Image (cartoon, rainbow, N blue to C red; front, side, top):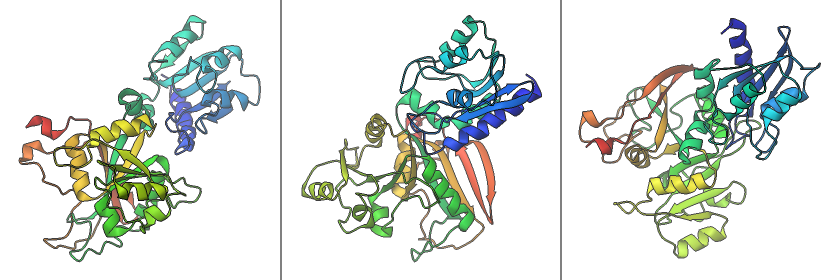
Length: 371
């Protein structure tokens, strides 16, 4: 692999990121077309249902791409979906070589796209900046494989592990840079989920407030439909799609449905709460490929125990507030032994103003299976 190959693929990765929040449940994909070491065309998948990155890049070429090199972050599709196969366009425009970041896990593609090009005599090199390309589309890779949302558990806490003072005051744990980053994530992921306790305590809006952003579908875990009819969630339900996950239908659910809430009937778990695995299956069937789980602490533990969390985002402020009764990010019953604790992998730490964002993956099975 040449250094220039990585340079052009990283440019394709930067282009792919421009589709964040617009292409779900499709992957973010970028494409660069190079001739005589010059970029002559660029494109990315701009919105779900729109042209794929390769076709956009070919359409944007400033000169004939015949014989040129094409760099694309994900294997070109070879099947008809909302748009024609990208392999057809590559062959029609007589591209000379193709460099692929990573193969597509979609069974309809899964190596077939690269093989079609090779069979037509076009050299194809795969695995260019593969780790970076896979990380970019971790949501897509999970969703296409499991058909359930990729769940990101997010919380903000002080250095001594508190999400609020003992009085309940929580404004603000982190500063503006960290809060702005949260809204970028809300824009990127199509769903946001909280428990009814958070709705009752905070009366949140759960919208994206970044310029040009898109608010996610709001999902409230509310087994007995206790969400108040005068809450901001309900009052704005006709403006922002909202799902209430319940375990039974009653007069309350009827009133909430009349206010514009989408009622989703779920199985109950052993405690009588919404079964989170059943909820994830139903949301996946609605093509919600990822969810930002923002609280509260009991729901956070239930999600970890159920094994539905794939990534943790912990925003940490360099503050000490104390308080034996002050809230912590993860509550619930807790695991009985330190050996049962879930261990994050692939940790990264990102400074955000005075605060820090610690991120890590949870690819393991639920801890409850280890008992």
